[in-house]
Image (cartoon, rainbow, N blue to C red):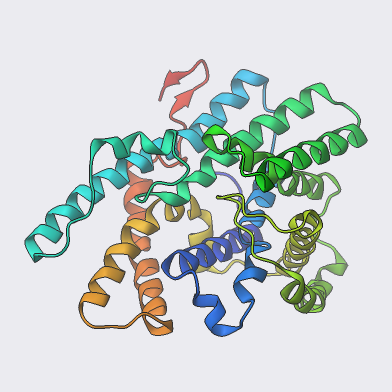
Length: 340
């Protein structure tokens, strides 16, 4: 929400996450061009760190009604908005493709409801994360309400993650990304614990964070296996949690001394908008560049990435200015569930 005091290194962490996500969506193999197993290593913390950051800011608020209202405002309203927004952009892209005489894309009104019952939908794939994040918040809220001791809370979290892992390795899918949420819960709880123990406060030890990150980088690189939380492609249980925990905490520690970096922190602050809109920019750009004769590879990926982030800047301004209630900048529902 706009108006809250910003934490510079948290915005930087979110910026790095969303940039890595954009790069991955442009070309799944891009990072492996740089090093053979780099994508697997980045998968170990790219999305888990987003859950971690969300856990840092978890609050019970003023009861279940207020908690639910806030999560609807900040997660579900943007989810619905970006689904509708993407459909409108796809309609425009269809018209442009027709004018250029290019191959048409599939488009139908069924795509407006597919995100609510399908695992994958082509127009706005990254939005699955918002559904998962909503359920993670709800699950942890319930745990907080019904389990008082910290050890009980951690034990319940571990049990839920084991259940989610069991579903994942057996390819049992639950609706609305609930199965992924069970697996992702420990990353969220780790963020909540970090705040609880005072890890967000400045410390003389913060200068050693970059050393810790360098020390763990190589083991994480060599030990990481491919994982995909969206489709529940999961490595061994210990790799699913131990490696991301180490990577997240080391990176968090290394980022703490960083000052406010205007452009990067701006992208981090509005990473929700980038999450919901970057496929709508990068896919047409990639199509146009390929049409102009550019070949797939590092050059194409970097070009699409730079152009996408440049175009995100005015798009962020446009949506936060003219659609703030749909992009979590202002509440859509006021207390009492009154429309704002």
